[in-house]
Length: 442
Image (cartoon, rainbow, N blue to C red):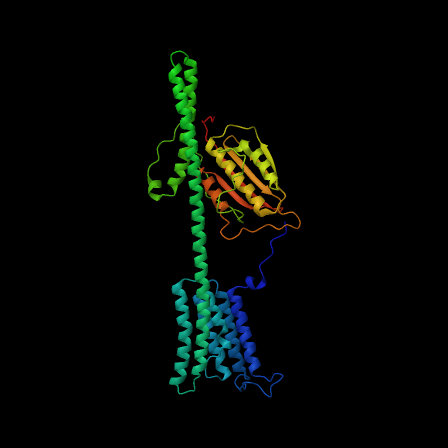
């Protein structure tokens, strides 16, 4: 897979950098106004004698240094940076012999207003606008009170330009806040959707287990006097089914309670001796890319209603028909897995494989089921990136939350989840699910 291209140059320049560029452009424009350029009989503005003296050059240099200092501070301390940037045009305008602060000297302030309005809280943005407009008012008032000529219309034009820059920044900031809220709501909805799906699957699992309990209880009742050994076997099946169902319910309900502060503060009952819940970083993720979707993975025909890892070969066959070869590898000796963990592991693989088909552009992927650790089930799905001439497809609008659903499913089981690009290209999804001890699944 080709390397991700770097951002364009104009996107990599910081707001402080743009403020410095704006000051330099303003100074260049000021110089052009005071020299004769081709096509003109003379300069637009007479340079005056002050600008050519050492004190005039010193003031222009001081204004430039103040601007550079403000540009450096703009990202970390925007209020202090704006103070430097506001003093700079006042100092630099003095040797120019003008009646108002020129627009060219206020360009850096406009850039700062835009950056502050776009990225800072509303209160700070309003304070920056008042400072910028207040400086123009004070500069004009001082000249009027001193009996000097004042460029009122020029000052109004500069103030209007500053206001427009601030409004554009506020518009971008509000659009960004709206986009962030929308992403948060979509992610929350993805979590809710996945939890509802998990609840439906748990309902089916519990209903199946209760059916087994009812059948075995009826069989034991009929043969308890005539065939004690058969009755004992039926009772053992009842015990196994009830314990594994209880363990699965506790895993799910425990994760749901963790999101409720009041419920989390309530004392937990003593864990059942038949099961153990492994606590781990269920909500920790290293996802650096999103190739998932908000909807659940596609239900492929031919799969069982409640599939598990035993159906991976069938999943690989059906995915191969869709144009992507799936190699299933197993490490370690197969061991019994509780139904809820078995189903969740399959759903994670199914979602990841669907992402490969829809978004990766890869011709194949590898599914690895690692059962070498008796206390942990690890599943990994990885591809090597798009084939030559086939770029990885970015998720469309409303997508990008399939990883959120997988992460939530792993969190319900108190496991660990990671997803991100492979070092050699392609994408990898890994889920590690703790296996409770003491439960012998059917």
